[in-house]
Length: 342
Image (cartoon, rainbow, N blue to C red; front, side):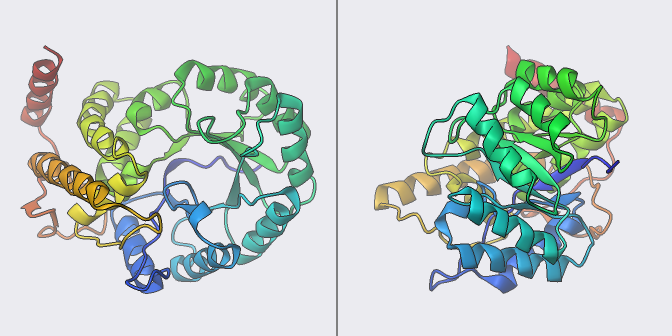
């Protein structure tokens, strides 16, 4: 029995240089920064990494660079979705040979498929790979994976070891956990919806693949750690602090431009997306960046220092991080949450 994947896996942004190529040096520096601030794993070639905007050789190179550079410091969950079954199997085997913990495969996209077709797609892949497979349910972009299909795959395919669900649907996640966990306690449930991170932990998720962790890894880890200790009041207080930041980033229409702007506010210029933007779109993104700067400035006044390798004089944006929270810290957050709810 394999160990479940626990904790926060960052779906890292892919840095682009001035000539439009993958900036390998910046990619390495950026993931070092994430690891130093306590993320539990990395998830390259995901939606936040804009996997569809890179060629298959580029996607393979991204995983190769990260496996070599990370060198086992944290596990890597590699996005391995390709346009068809054969290419996906080839990508899975390539990434497995590089040393990833598992691969994540989105359900078939472009064509809308029913549950039986979705099951057969994943089963064909799982039966022909030698690396663990995580299902990726993102119904806004691809054929949905229903509860019955997840249960069938968990029972029929030992290589299928988990699901990343980005629907944000808490009852759906609860039904999946109820249907699968008694039969496969090793099966991992990961949430991709940052707005409900603490509630998802409360109902039993093992971890998350959260784009916000690429901007505030300290905060998403703090939510996870409070949840694992059963400190639900604190987890929810932190969740309410994450919510406006996430909403500001995800509401930027050209996903994941808002998260690129968030990273820039933290000091990481990861370049421009390969998606062309108009002057109006750039102006909108700049307005979002100003909003993020204000939110992060407010966060910096109380955000707990949790990353093991973070030096005392390093800062969030331009403001020094506070130390571990006191009772006053908790009281201040409660008052602020109540003020916002009024």
